[in-house]
Image (cartoon, rainbow, N blue to C red; front, side, top):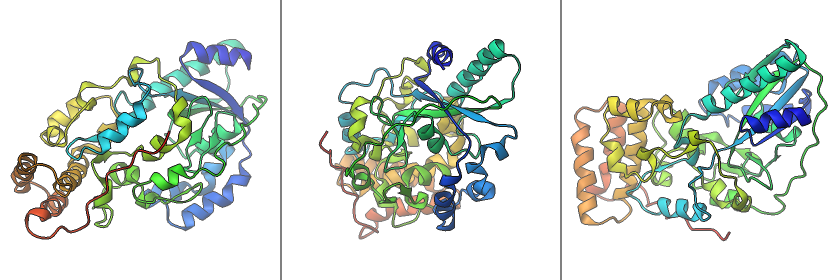
Length: 369
């Protein structure tokens, strides 16, 4: 294990641990989550079923799982980074993109490092069976991370660590080597409910249980249909993902900054306004999101999300000049929008046609640190 940790450090990984493959205790919770329909339109969740909790079925011959975490908070994030993010959310005309997505696609960054770690192991022990994963297969990543001592499962269902909060990615190497597991961490959420209280859509329906159908990350990234009317005002200016439960979590006072240039914020996402991003045509979207996790949602879904956020800005009492600029931009796009986008633009423009369709979303309150 000491040698593995040394190699992991050399590769820029934040932490590494070993888990076994018996996840039978996690199966009832997974089954109940699926039966409740909390996976929404993510059909692949149900398609793979309990295979997610059975690593040896997913990759026959797997005996152990090497888990890794990789910090992603940009190096330039200040000590008051959470306050800065809350302030961004309180400015209706600014665009809020989840912190993890402002740099390079984490799938590529972490998977490449895990593959190099597997090559180091092979050079030391000879050829061995393995497969690398990073949010790319039916894997219970948080469960494995908890068993490997990389963190404990927080009430928002993300992995948490005392020295890193939750601002890290998870990845795994399934191996046919019998490795000694590392001890799990004790959970330290206690009676805190900050993440539940902060969720704009109340998607965390109970501690350790998220209804993805209400989650802003799901709605803006995974869901490809119309965003439910009753949830649109609650998205505020969030156009790709949502960090509110992490911003509210006290443990993220200790979030580690990444030393990797991959996660530095791209210029386009440093301080964008909604109108600046709305102005991108598809070619510009593809060019400016090249190598980014954002690209996979496509330009059409990107515009749908922006239309909702622009509609929320119109409902938020912005000044007359900003209101006129947003209205003109929406109207200009309406004539060449497909049916899905046109419906969201129509909704966005409703405040100009009569009484608002829904109450304005309240500006997020900055929780106590």
